[in-house]
Length: 114
Length: 112
Image (cartoon, rainbow over all chains, first blue to last red; front, side, top):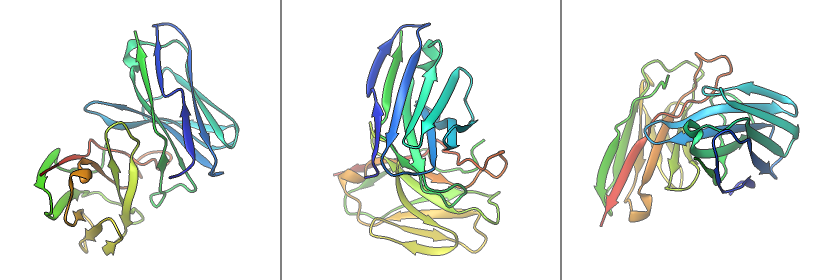
């Protein structure tokens, strides 16, 4: 399995509080992604990074920000958590972009916003 | 918008061959077709990828007709452990960055 870890694995927080999720990789892959997965929606891309300090928005980026100060770490921040952000969050990495890319996923973080 | 259409669910029995078909009528010339598998409480896992004709690996086969408007993932002799959600992906060339779009997938249930 690709060397991807996510922390925390589970978190319960209250509406209005900031939350930061961390993704760490040991593969030295250039591209990193944050997805959320909700029942009935499959996986939806939040943000992705194509290098240190290079990030871009995905399909559902509102309410989220990201940062990548090192190749191995990609942080997802919910500035002020809302109940609609209760979800399972997956980080993924890939060596390349384009339709031939293979993404490797982390174990996920379950976030509950009360 | 997802560019693929696949059945929401399928049932099978242990030992049977399972074929999951995915439609991608608007596939672009440079798009590859990729399948992922996801077990409960885990992230998706790459299974197989192809561009045309047939691709086979130790896990599955992928059949792609000449027009490439559909593809079929074939799982030989499934076991209970193959119970999972299977996602078919092609490129999202309509997007600004060529992101892959995960649809809702096909939930395969294998029964004893």
